[in-house]
Every structure is written in C-alpha cells, then in structure tokens.
Image (tube, rainbow, N blue to C red; front, side, top):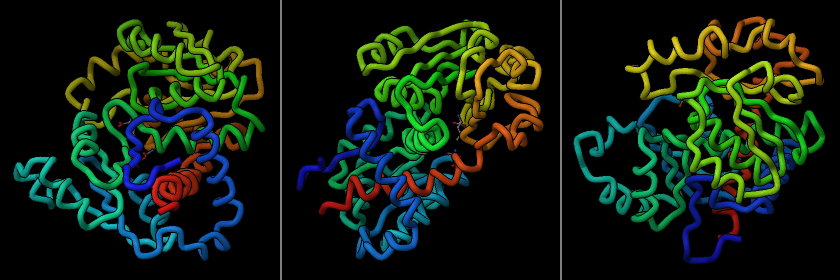
Length: 313
Ligand code: CP
Ligand code: NVA
C-alpha cells in the first residue's frame, strides 16, 4: 500500500516485502496480457515523470518512456549534462525543484548515495533506474520472465555466473531470496558478494543464497543461468584486471553449459559483450536464451511499478 501524502520510493527491493513484489509482478503480467485494453485505464493521466540519466541506457530509457506514455502520462528525459546538476547545482536543490513539477523522479546514477539524497528531499516517489548497487526494475522483469518460463519462482534454482558485487546480481538475489528462489552465485574470490550482504539476505526471506568459486558447480542443477557484464558502467578503469579475473573461467559458453543437468533458460539483462561474459552462440540459442523476452518484460514491469507507486493517488 502507498499511503496518501507519504511518497513511497523504489531504491532497492530490500525495502519491499514478498507480497508487494508479487503484487507488482502479477500486475505486470496483466499489463502484458492486456496491453492495449489497459492503456485505456490512463493510470497516469495528467501526470509527468522526470527520467534523469547520469549514464547511458537503452532498455530502461525506452521502457520507462513508453510505459509512462502508454499509461497516459508524459515522460520528460533529462541527461545530467543538460541539467544545472552537471554544473554543480546540488542534488537536494534539483530534486526540490523537480518534485514541484513532476509526479515522480526516476534516476540512473553513478552512486547509490545520490538516490538516497534524492529520496530525502523529494516530495514525490523516487525510482532507481540503476545505481552502482542495485537495479530493481531489472529484477522485477527477470522474475516475471522466470515465472513465465518455469511457472513459479519459489524453489527455482538460479545460477548467476560473474561479478558477485554486481548491481544486477544484487537485485536478482534480493528479490530471489524474498520470493523463495535458490540462488547460487559463482565468482572469483575477490569478486564474491560481501559477507554482510549475504547475512542480510539470509534474514530477508524463505529463499537461499550459496556462494561458490566454481561455475561448473553453479550451473549443474540450475534451471536459470544468468550472467551480466564483467565491467559495469563506471568501472572502465578496472577493465583489464577484471577481465583477467573472470576470463576464461567465468564465461558462459558451450563448454560450461555441458555441465548442466536441468532444462535451463539463459538470461542476461543486456547489453551483452559477446566474447566476454557470454558467447554469441549461447545468447543466440533460441532453445534456451530468453534475453529479448526479458528486455520486453522491462516495459510491463515498469508499468506495474508506476501504477503501484502513483496509480492510487
Ligand atoms: N538492462 C538495462 O538496464 O539496459 P540499459 O542499460 O540499456 O537500460
Ligand atoms: N552491471 C551493468 C548493468 C547494465 C544494465 C552496469 O551497471 O553497467
């Protein structure tokens, strides 16, 4: 429930319980099934949403923009460099101004603290469109995709191969544990999740989280195999050492997949760097790869999030 007068933000799915996450995913499924009919509901009629980007984006920019449009609202796109923010105007001033014009502020930021500062000063909901720590909108689309392919989320074994401190992984793990999935993450020792994060997750829900070094062990019983880039936006300076740590062992390729025993789907949030974290043949394998359905589901889950945060007002 979103209480009148108090903006509910979406900075991390850690702040949402299983029931709320399930409700958003369920509504996203309805938005998908009845895309045109539901547009007539005009959930965001007369409302405008600020979409602020400090980093590049294709899926998030397009899915949020189309979601707002199809819900009857108006998206406003702002690149940081075009705002006075780019010249040093404080976040707290920018947000207090924008929240007097817009009904919600969504932002893709370099540092998660920026979102926390935004939420502190905003009188309207703030939505995380990716930070260095989390990517909640991605995780919601991921679980809609898993639900569609596996018929359930509870008890499904999800192997994430790659950077255990990755923003996409963090949100996948948070939502997964809350929804009862079995998460297994395979990363080189220095890229494994922080023990504090694992501890928090253990108390977050009925799912489980296991950390291993060996990607073959992770994929063995996996029904979902997921990877993300080894070098995220903002980590370009670490490129060389990261690629050295992850390659060739953590690449999702035909050889690694020969260790699977279950009927798995392959997932990736995109954009993918073919030849690094995944090979072209794995991503193009239509028998297993669901990456474009995943990308499509960003639209439906974006609508469900907007309707959840703004629809009741
Ligand atoms: N998956 C995702 O967020 O893609 P973009 O960076 O293109 O928005
Ligand atoms: N981990 C990636 C995800 C991109 C959608 C990044 O932050 O660059």
